[in-house]
Structures are given as structure tokens and as C-alpha cells.
Amino acid sequence: MKKATVKQLMLGLAVSAMVAGSIPLANAQAASDATATAAPATTASSAKAAKAQHRAERKAARKQARAKKNAELKKLEDAGYQPGADDPNYPSNLQKAQKKAAAASGASQ
Image 1: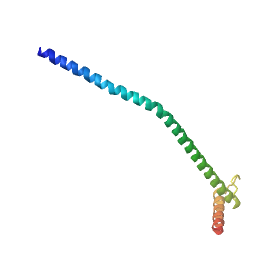
Image 2: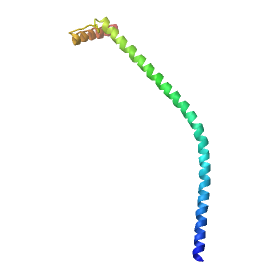
Image 3: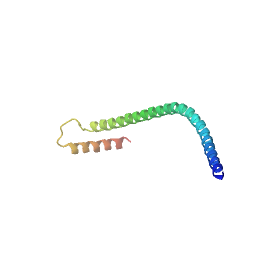
Image 4: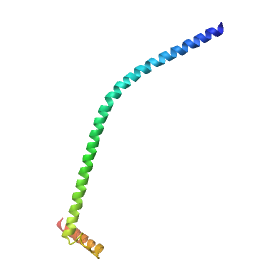
């Protein structure tokens, strides 16, 4: 009789634990489902906005770098450098133009 009582008690505890354990999980899952459906829309729109902003920043940086490079090339061309020419004295002509451009910009400042 003692064994049967212990078995019934253990069975009762096991069933109680399963029932009690499943109720909060079901509620927690329902709450997280509601949050999960609302969160991706917000997250997706903020991710798109962040991506668009990053793209715009990169575009502005490229535009600024291109303008700087073109201005530098213009100064070298004004100093006598011809980038499209088939020049056997390439490094020395470029260096001369760089020195001229540096001297001209130093004098103008």
C-alpha cells in the first residue's frame, strides 16, 4: 500500500508540473508572437533607412574624393604634366609637375 501511495503521489506531482509548466510557456509564446510580428516591420524599416543613409554617405564620400582627385590632376596639368602622353620620362615629368604645383600653391597661400 505504501508503494502505491508513493507512485500516485509522484504521478500527481509529475502531471502537476507538466500542466503548470506548460501554461506559462503557452502565454509567453503568444506574447512573443505578438511582439515578433510587430518587431520585424519596425526593424525592417529602420534597417532600410540605415542602409539608405549609409549608401548616401558613401556616395557623398566618393563624390568628394573624385572632386579632390580631379582638382589635383588639374593642378598637375596646369603645371605641365600630360597624363595621356606616351612619356618615356614619366616619373621625372610627374615629379617636376608636382614640384611646380606645390610651389605655386605655396606662393598663392
